Image 1 (cartoon, rainbow, N blue to C red):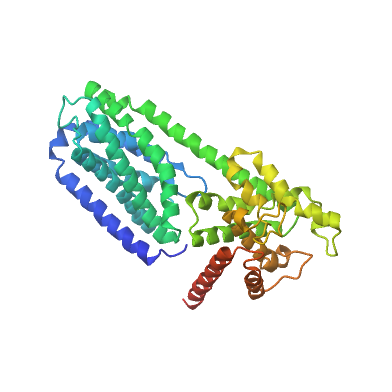
Image 2 (cartoon, rainbow, N blue to C red):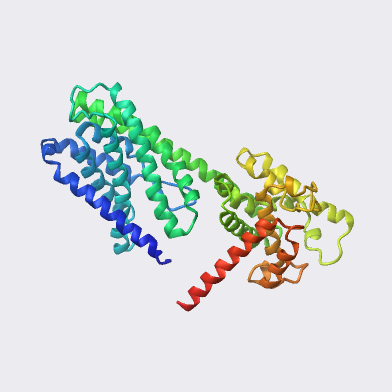
Length: 438
């Protein structure tokens, strides 16, 4: 397991201190809620069940739960001290049970951190709710339901942003990924979960007001339905990612080197795009485009692609059509609309001498130019093993490959992309040097 970055460790400890301070404040103000222990215990169990049934974000080890309606209901019916005491206890117990097979020290450490990350946004939501004039049933038993909506909506927006910022900052500090990319990825999951499900907390709170203990029991069915909806969305995302993997794996049946090539191009394209600070949507899909950039070669015979001799004009024309064929394949699937022009243009050149369309620099997308550099470098250098290298070409050294990119900068390759590639290579060389000396 890779050691945690120092900056992340400091950030994690700060988050723990803030979360603990909020929890201690809440416990200190819980006196008036002691007569309601049975209801609080039931809320504890409902939130705990939500934590025990997490939905994993596809392609990551990050879990999302649907406990927000229950937590908001607890806050609206019993006030912020109750919510900020019961919810953290439920969350930390749930996280420790779900991840009980992990190393105990890691389990306690990261469970506490995750609980603190959840506690702070709950505190933000409750304090913003009060600040904008919201009233809870606990403080104002005759409060009108309609008067809750606007304060709760504002509070949920504040909580969602706080949650995304806290989570993103930690993720970015530990992984080194751009903060902006991690933030938008977080919002992609947190926003639907918070903004769509949280208002149902009002309904649950009113059920409690009307029916007491039994009203809390009535939350269970819509709670399960919400969890199932989130799970279905997760499954759709997983199906999309499986489609990418399946399409990319087709090439493995044709050429031994392809699997390593596709993964290396995808990885390098991702690094270059991040180095250049490309827009969020580009960063989201550039890796998939790298994995699928050669899908059009499925229709090209092995005899042509693995030919070690001189190719005929007809053979060259066939090969030069593979970007267009790949774009045609991907255009049939709505999920891949964004990357179609990137795949089609990954053999175009700034000087207009590329293929299949002969586009010039002004017409070539920056994403296609990124893939072009990553693809060309890996085609020249290949992987570490002989089987990952092309049979028709003697592989170049890394230095020779870099020299070729420099030589083609401005004609064959976009100079902005070449510059970013060099920066990525320089940084990796420094990082590898540190690893060797540590």
